[in-house]
Length: 394
Figure 1 (cartoon, rainbow, N blue to C red):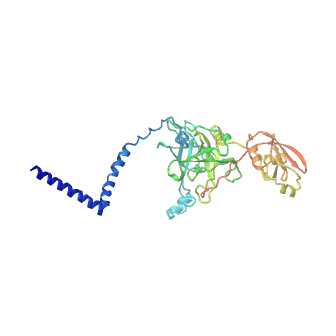
Figure 2: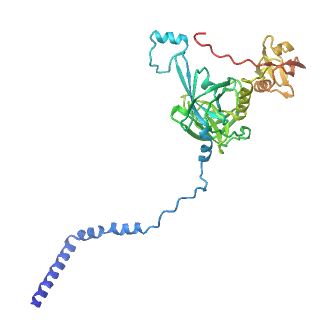
């Protein structure tokens, strides 16, 4: 019996070995595929054996970038919606069948709603923004980043620098720390914070591209910080901050052929904004000196054409009747070379020097006339406000 069982076992083993031999000879890939299917098991074993992921860095580890500056400044930057009531002429036109769809915006005098940004500079609710954001507005709404909303009171405006001061009444308002624009240098990193295109608060980064930009025809008094941080429609009145999150400028304009950012934006330095805000909060307006002259830059070619020799200064092109300059005896064709103790070499310098004078004060002015230097004593007047465009019903 045992002999028969052993014979059956031996025959079975012999048949199995023969089958394996035939397969290995005729279909060796079958055996290789079987071995390949075991590979994932070995791979899985290797993955399980890998060391664990390193722990997350501690909260005290400094990160690169400007997240800390953005966190410090962003809560004090608000969104502003300024609504302008329609004029009587516009209302009459609307009643007579003006269409509702205006592909390029409503015609002049129709109801308008402007969007911009602002910056809270004190915990009692004082805001800075651009004059052009709120100019002519009948209703101004402010929205904070925490979702709170409030109607703003217009304290005062200064069209010559395109600045406006607003006030809101809410508890626990965040205020942005003020920096020093005079310490900025070309190449310093800055952030522009605002509400471009009404998409919500946005932070863009760049550098200071230039300082003291003027003669751009944007404002009467120009001393702009130029930056390549993206500034778009809706950013007007927003904050330009340094790498520490301190306010260094109020974003006000861009150079653009398409309406979008091309990397050339301009901001009013915070030093100018602080002076304007202080004057408006104290007196309701900004008082600047005025002497009533029209000027031209005195180029070497112009000096030669007018036989002025090597005169250095600003050419007086016109004198306003009954203005301080006319009363003192200054005439067209004179070359103004000095205001007080400050030498004058350009129209921008003259404008800034005279504007810094206090109205009703006295100032000594030096001019050259026919090769002679003359001194005049002027009673400084107050600079008139820049005229605003008349509404259709005025």
